[in-house]
Length: 397
Image (tube, rainbow, N blue to C red; front, side):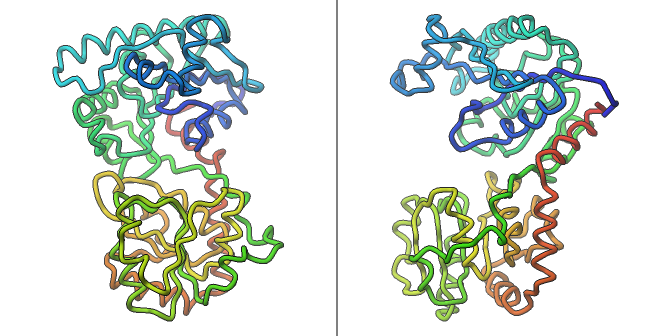
């Protein structure tokens, strides 16, 4: 990035800045704000959502802003503001007709652009860069209407693999990537996807805050419920959903090695709740845990696993949990995907349940202190600062 040159970022996203689970766009907003001014645009509500979820705190906030009861533009910290647009959009996502969808989407785009334009003027922004975090519908016309210095499309999930997006998203996302000045992605798979429509598409990595996942910070004994579980412990932390995890891999490991304990931490969907895993004596479901306690549980694992199932939704995902596993120095076995190629020197990658079993055994056998330190250093290189710098580099800033 050219020294001394300042840009003003406008970030549009599928998630609000106060989204409880956090998001890449929010983390990047804070990182961009270290060097530039940033306006984070919270998504406006659409009419059907307002009707159906009027009591939701987020919707109440937007209604109050429209009624003038709360401020639309709020300073979050130095160089960072958030905007709640004073408008309601038409509900169009599931409209089948291309003509009707495009007509209403253009109306929505003008409403959103008008609100962003007012905020940009109030803040005195210039050299504006729009960073669109997969917000393919609402942001489709922002480049045309606001004429930014650059329009960057950010792909961090294979959105069009999800049924909700497929009706119009397959067409719209491709068109938006094509007209963007460049596209950046957090996985190799998604960067290649973007490159189909825009040759200026780049893999920029993934930021991750792993400061809490540090074995040196674990001073207390492990939580009581995991302390007495027989070693070795093969563990997983995250959502236990059939859409994302391969139940058969976990069943195979538990059945083949009854002398190993399989520990699963996280919320379950019905498929997991009704699976045979609950009837195996060496499988332990510990439920959801407060985020602050997860490093203590992870510290008790002998091998961490991510038995991701391969489908359209998961194949391009960058699994942030892998960085957390590695930051604790844990031997890790994960499903081989194109997105996982960046981890190949630090993670055992499996193609089948049989390979999972063999690689978990190998991970247990050949772990060393030197390997643990190498894993930790690799994970700690994936900072939000490094992620932002890759975006700056790709953008020619």
